Length: 110
Image (cartoon, rainbow, N blue to C red; front, side, top):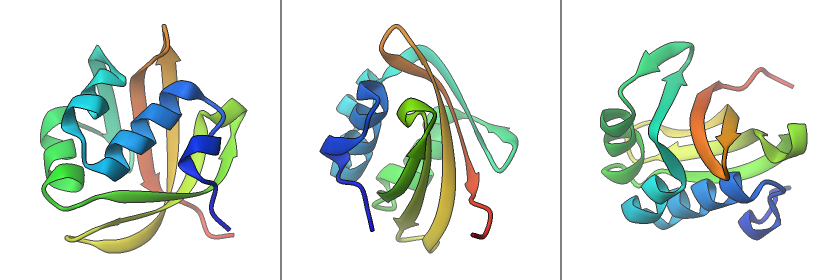
């Protein structure tokens, strides 16, 4: 069962997921601090390059299955036109109502 985006607990994470699913670059970057950083499967990535490739040019979408840590930890089915669908884990650091860091990677098996 998925959690509707408007029911996600943390407002900053909710804005991030909504912008990602709407393919809205402006809203996505508005949800981040100007110096936000990220990692994918434990490797630091260039945020703008990664988001262009993995989200915006490949129609990325998240269907959230579970949230932890007040909504700052998510397990979601992430899909895009490049890789198809995969179960992913996301961790967010929020500062001043915006996301300053996110980490993503494959979620462990149940």
